[in-house]
Structures are given as structure tokens and as C-alpha cells.
Length: 181
Image (cartoon, rainbow, N blue to C red; front, side):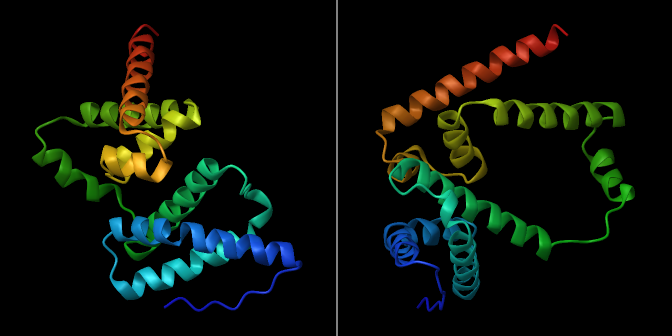
């Protein structure tokens, strides 16, 4: 059970927050569930996410439900990823990468090239329109099915599939262009 005590400057802010809570609480819960957190952690993280949303109410346009939903999913996902990173922080060491290199049957140069390509791909994805970024993120980062993405974004499954297809085409073209440099 979620119990938060927040104070807002205006009744409009209170109403806006309550509307966000009622409309998107299941999406937040479902997104947290995808990270396979236990119930206590999901509850703690959802409290933190609601506090974060409350502190950014001015940034949320509730008249555009798709944009708001994408924003809330992104906030939830990023908060969850940051939480996981903070839980798994260890002192970084270059030597930790060496066993991976030795067992993967590839040399260091090949490994660095692959890392560079992943970095380049992430930059190119960030340049895409939001409609493509959101479906790519939900599909490949959060591992949602096309049906789940369609449900989250209030789209038809065919629209999701078409956006994934087009995003992949755009990225392939950019990849071809990268090879020409």
C-alpha cells in the first residue's frame, strides 16, 4: 500500500499529482516488475519515483497522455537502472575486463572496436525521433513484447511493428554511412 505525504503549492498541483498517480500507477508498478524487484523494493522505488514526479510537476503536460506516459516510463526505467547500478557498484578496474577478453576468443582491438560501435549506436539512437526512440527503448532495453509496447503507448500492434521496422532501417542506413567515413 502506497502512503505518501506530499505538500503542494496549489490545489491544481495536488489535483495534477493525484491524476498522475491514478492514471499511471499501474504502469509504474508494471515497469518496476519488469526489473524483477521484490515487493518491498518496488514499493520503496515507487515512493521515490512519485516524489521525483512531484518535484517535476511543471515539466509534465497531462494534456498529452502519450508524452506523459513515455515520460513516466522513462523516469521509472532510469530510476530503476540507477538503483541497480548503485547496488552493484564495485571499484572499477581495467583488469576486470581481461578475463572477458581472454575467454571471448577475440583480441583487444576487436573488443575496443565493438565497444566503440555500441557507443556510436547509442548516440545514433538518441538522435532519432521520440516515436522511434521510445519503441526501441521499450523493446530492447526493457524487453517488452510488441503487444506490451502497444498497450503502454496506446498504439496498435502494427504501428509498433512499423516503428521498430523504420527505426531499424534508419539505423542501418546510418551504419552504412559510418563505414564510408
